[in-house]
Image 1: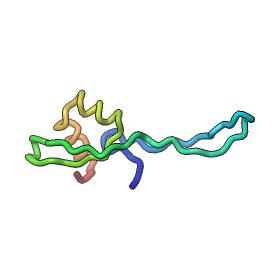
Image 2 (image 1 turned 120 degrees about the vertical axis):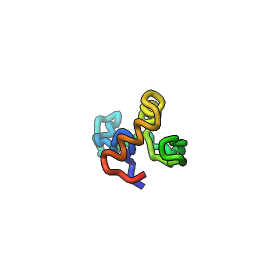
Image 3 (image 1 turned 90 degrees about the vertical axis):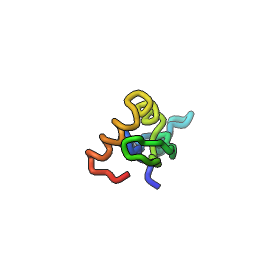
Image 4 (image 1 turned 60 degrees about the horizontal axis):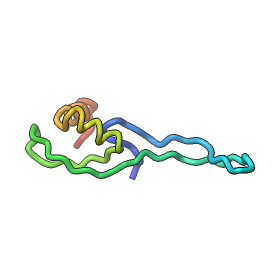
Length: 78
């Protein structure tokens, strides 16, 4: 599974782990992806989205109908 939020498009960031002796090794910062089921009144069914924690807050703020319309406008299938 890819670590990508369907709402915000958040993808992993990359950087370094820095040890006490200051040696650097590459690491990956993954977004906090959750599988969430939402009832979408405009579609009349439930949809399962892979969203980040920040994406869940965006859905709470804008409403699921607006977010689903934005995802479909991008051409993404739900």
